[in-house]
Image (tube, rainbow, N blue to C red):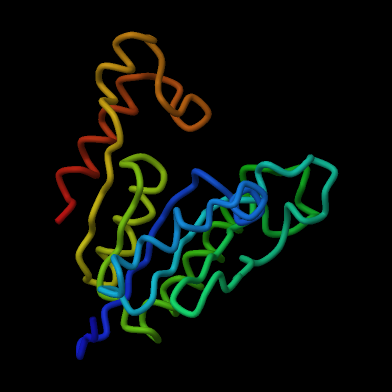
Length: 182
C-alpha cells in the first residue's frame, strides 16, 4: 500500500530494551507498529532503558542512544542518569537525563514532522507522551493493557510501586492522562 501522506509516530514504551528484544527475537513487537506501512516511520522510545544495567555500569549514564531497527523503525533509549559524576545524586541525575531526552524528542518531532504520539501506559510513559503531545500540538493515543483497577483491587498495591507510593496517586495520574488523550 502506497501512501501519499507521510505519517510518523512516536511511541513511548518501557516494556523491553533493544537488547532484550534482540536476545528474545522480538523485533516484531516494534516493527508491527507501522501498521503495514500506514506509518512511514515509527520512533519507539524507552525513557530509561539503562535502568536494567548494574549500578556499576558506566552505560547507565549519558545521552539517549539511537538505534535503527529497520528502514522504518528507530529505537531511542534514554538513560537512568545523564552524568556518571552525579551518580551520588540519582534523582537530580535522572531529571537531567529525562530533560536531555525530552529536548532530543522535541527536536525529533519538529524535524521529522511526527504526526501522532502514542504511550503504552497512562503512567510514566503517558506523562511523557502527554507532555510531548501538548507542547508539540499533535494527537495523543494511550494504550491500557488489562484492567488496572481490578489488578490494584486484587493486589492492593500500585501497578508501578517504584513510581507511585500510593494507589490513590497512581489512579489520579491515570485519570489525568487518560482524560487528555485523543
